[in-house]
Length: 198
Image (cartoon, rainbow, N blue to C red):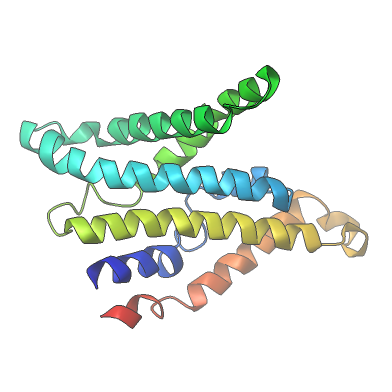
């Protein structure tokens, strides 16, 4: 139950992008087309989940006992970057050299986004109160929440007809208005998903 509660709370109630407004820049800049949003959101979701799931035991078993807890953000960056490079290498196995290079060029950007998202999970700060089930659930939930946010934002942005938008709001202004309305919608349902499995 702790796993499911943490999963749904992190994915819907405490969505990192819309409820906590972390990583909004990457969502606004990258989520242009729905086809690209699945790939970007999936890679960030996997990297966030891996960084959070591996970062929590790394913090509790290695960094905290040795008194170097301030290195937790660096550990999250290294873990998420390694996960992204492994994923990109597996995905680029049967592709051309140019496609593999393009995948590996985007790895540091996606890994830094995932590391920022994974650090903000709060696993390192709340390691004394979290169990392994709750830490794993919140890590997977945060990754799924990022995937949900990126894909939803890309689909909404794709449906906006720029011709119907006033000239002063075209481009970035209407994108920011859309993002703020989606963030308002996510904060309007806070507390519903987390209370299902208590």
